[in-house]
Picture 1 (cartoon, rainbow, N blue to C red):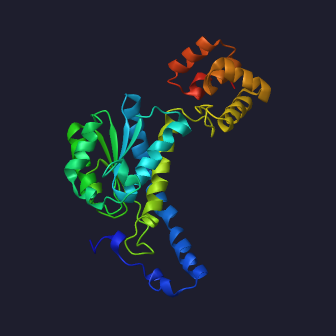
Picture 2 (spheres, rainbow, N blue to C red; picture 1 turned 60 degrees about the vertical axis):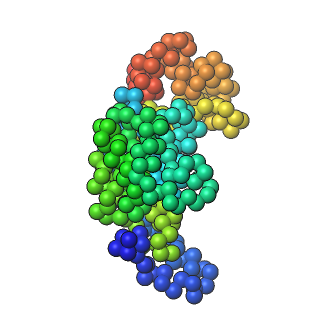
Picture 3 (cartoon, one colour; picture 1 turned 120 degrees about the vertical axis):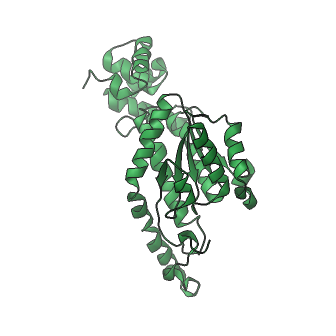
Length: 296
């Protein structure tokens, strides 16, 4: 363990407890500024992962995030944000954490040491060759994650290893390795800090990139948003008004008659009925840009 980057000491914070509060926070902030650059260096590998996951999802596959401790919590967080952001089915992106849901709020540290549990958790969700799994482990050596990756790979599933340590076991066990290395933590071994931030940035890019490629975004607009509260109703109307070039009031009427943002836009832009618009969207696999290909 002492040879892992995530466990090594950061010289810049060696005397952090003797600094003033402002100086202390300055050290943390300076360290954090290196995180985005570590993720930037991994963009080619993140792109490979996005394209590979999209290919699996288009064939009916799902995306799993799996990890222990902070890594597991970040995976569950990203997975849980996909339905409200993109209106994905709840089972399309699944977050699993060692120790189960109780581990989201309570430390169950020993749960990460059991590789069989990683396999079991995937088995309980009927993981198959059409699915993808992102094994998340800052240290790159978590047995729970390694067990899951080995099982997924044995089935022919896509395996992606996300770690913050070079030449890690998780990377070696994965078809695609994503390895941002922001360096030693300000508080030695506290991977909820820089490693956690790097992990969150990568997961943001993975899920958002996948959803953009699947057509859940048009331009930079959330066109699959579901108007389930006042804020989202307003957002949906503004999106329709902007893309279809109609008034806010007309957008409200279109949303009511179309039932969804994308259907309403296709109805207005192409002069179609709701049934015709839904059929056109289905033919374009839900991609609004493709459905509007004949319009400006």
